[in-house]
Length: 77
Image 1: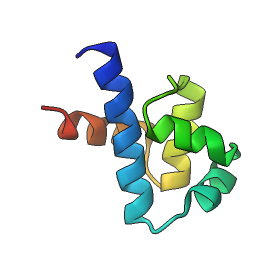
Image 2: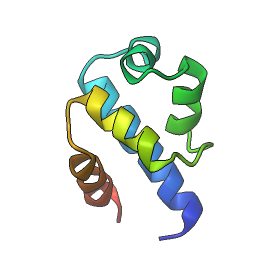
Image 3: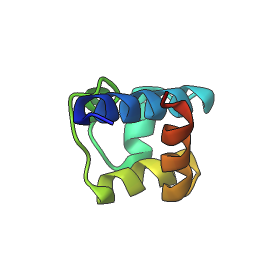
């Protein structure tokens, strides 16, 4: 998978999971301990996250890091 597609797909996965939990970007950012604009950048595929940030996102979504990556893989063509 190309880098850009992977980063974009990760952001789309995070956005979908966030919306499924009915979190605003602001509330989700609070749960993650991150800034709201950074969450927006991740969701738009503008930022490549570290493994530490991916773990924060997963925990705030109530899933494991493995679960987050499984969701990403399931959504990719």
